[in-house]
Image (tube, rainbow, N blue to C red; front, side, top):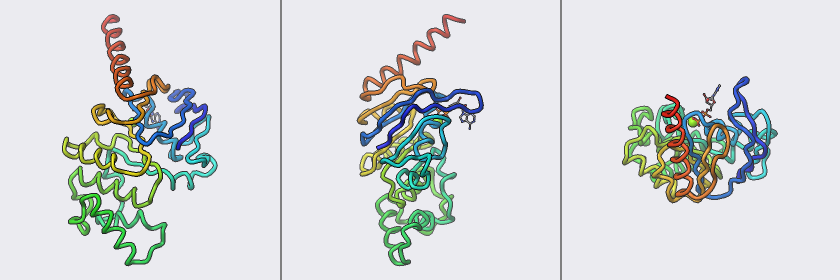
Length: 234
Ligand SMILES: Nc1ncnc2c1ncn2[C@@H]1O[C@H](COP(=O)(O)OP(=O)(O)O)[C@@H](O)[C@H]1O
Ligand SMILES: [Mg+2]
């Protein structure tokens, strides 16, 4: 559960988020909106990657501003570029890094790593160089390493943008099966049709908040209207 109250943010004197108030409790939530509408900025406040200029964010009751370390333990983050998230040389080592805070002994680490790699289809790659995996495998590795930390909430900022159709489907199917709450930022509208809630962000504000079908319609209408007005102005 993420609770956002009166959130406002500017980069310098450039306003990006205006008066955002949201209670995010559904299991599958999508944030959609045009490039530059403020989705990533908003999502980055959910685990203290960014401190908003004004307003409060609580994650499962934890004030992110006051306790960013604790908030971060609740919230895992996945980005489009899997390369930027892979830290260790091999696949197994990268997943093991996510387990470090549990202070398991060596045998338990191996058991947990094997089990995660098995679950996410990477078992044959345990000792391979992480950076030589395919794009889809890298994103599954990033997911495995984040899930190793046992977050309660997973934020995915355009995780499938760089993937081919097969890997988009695989990644999304995997998200569907997770017990975690998932907040997905995406431009791939077909993958959120079965989500519980879809929030349309436009120019730093909540433009629409509701069920996927209507949210996607509202978003398309907004973009078409904007294009039509542009044509009129030409
Ligand atoms: N670190 C930053 N410094 C200055 N401006 C930024 C920064 N990050 C994003 N912006 C600007 O803030 C606006 C919102 O960006 P962003 O949150 O990335 O939107 P989205 O994820 O919806 O594409 C854009 O105009 C973008 O150029
Ligand atoms: Mg973004």
